[in-house]
Length: 403
Image (cartoon, rainbow, N blue to C red; front, side):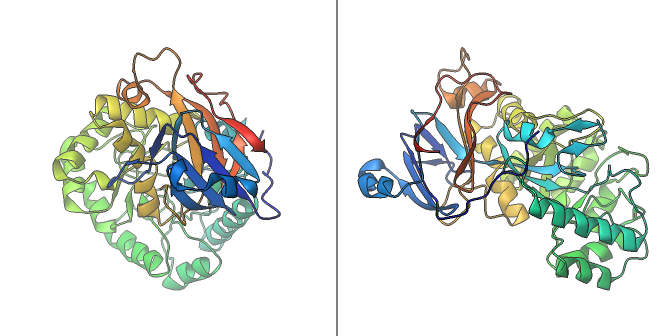
């Protein structure tokens, strides 16, 4: 089990050299012409070619120097849909250590869609507000393995007022749990409450499709469109998807984020991706696992979705990685997810799996293979080295100075 990861107590400086391929996470320019990254105090400060960066000067004050050994660097992966409860314990599967396992799958940031598996979850308004603030506070203080868990996502219930949302926002609550998992299941009420949440800076999502847990219900296209949440949560069902005509209706009827999850209907996932491609709206596609859930915990869920959508959805691998990074960062207003000066220094260093049929890293993903992860970095600090969960990488990075 990963305990609260130590944070930097003083200035930090990270240098990554000899990058073979740098994926930006930005759909507009998914591959960067660079082999070197500098980061100071957890933020990216320079990206470029070694000959254009005075590495002798830059390495002199470095706390950590990583030689990527010609491997691939991507932004840290973002899981847009998780259901945390208390630290790294999930009562849904009575499992401990699941967040650290996700880190070994390249996930450096995860966003709660509601702490709905909490035993005895309160449904009264005072209780649900208290639980949301508690979850926000606890995961703000706790960084399992260094992972950024954006928690504290209340599930709305009938009778809530605008003042309730203002109170939660002032307390630091930034997210709304899946609309539809509580007592509010009709469009007009949901729309009113979602608007209040948005007014106070809270990002919202909605349950889409058939019921998943006791207390949830069918949320169809009409309710999804009327509620107008920032994200259409698990548009491919969690687990049960809506009919194709309703998925099309949602894709065409709004410009909100289209979240595809691992624990959903794979055919509906590919159908949604095809619609987004036809509409020129790949910028709306984001990824989540919807774990922990009835089907368990999937440490490689996000990287599997990248590979699945690239290989079966016929999307270039460098574009598919944007679904798990920059697209989510933009839709969720995060400072990570894109390799860009000023953003969080969160990275995954990986390479094609040993003996993959793909001749290159990108080709291996487009053929449906998973990559081998050699290192994860969060806020400019190395958190893990060779992954215990992915297949072994062809080449791996090494720390040549610092720790």
